[in-house]
Image (cartoon, rainbow, N blue to C red; front, side):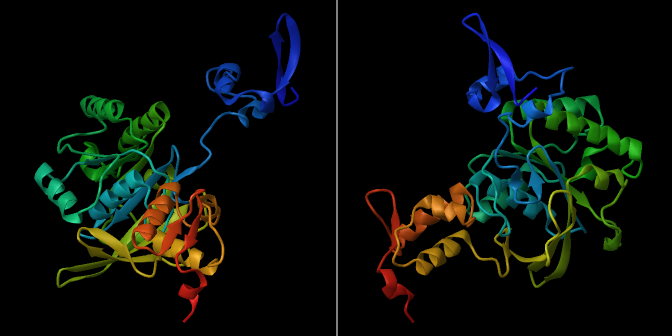
Length: 336
């Protein structure tokens, strides 16, 4: 097979290259062999997502991430923040996100507490769905049916389960008991094309990582630790550090973040709006198109356009008639 296939057009057998086929025809033409297998030349022309990550380097599409930490280290605050950032397409701790629909499922907190936390942030939660289910066990048929029903109704791109120990009836130290849950979650990933984030507890010794069976580490694409470095005077400061990542190299330094109004604010991380403004200042005499900001990887599509609106409202940039933008005041604003 030479990067194409033979088709019959008006009674004539004709060889057509995959690149000449319209995208919407690809699923009809490129059918799997034996249920799920594709010839490699055909497979690379499948109309698959162009952006492989929901969270840059950390959470791939149809991927798995585990977030673990000691008690009272802000795991639930952080996982709810992830859900919101994904729904809004906002950066998470400086990492670019792909806007998507998220479902945050809480197994430990009641509805009133969860609602209060959301209200306290004063943030928008478009494309975010939340629910509490204190008795759901994902190694039981009833628990699996309940979660499947929610997934079918919401159709989330990213599912967040918080915390894992509450969603398992068996022994979290037994590989077979944990695999019963992971096998079910693999079915959800494959069947509904979603990614999954598990929130988990660490033991007393944080150096031994998350509690329970080591099969969890083998299962996930990213294994991320939350470490509490200050928790007094009503102030919580944490370090967020991936322990391993399957699809990227580990960052040089952990992220330090402070809890403010029920969300963590990273220290030393520049916002997308600030990055966009700096770009305009560095190109003060130029007219800038949005695709230039995206090509410079300043943020996701949603975050960049939101930054452009904010900078316009602050009268720092101006929009020209033909869809370009320019620093308001031009070079004068870049002078000391």
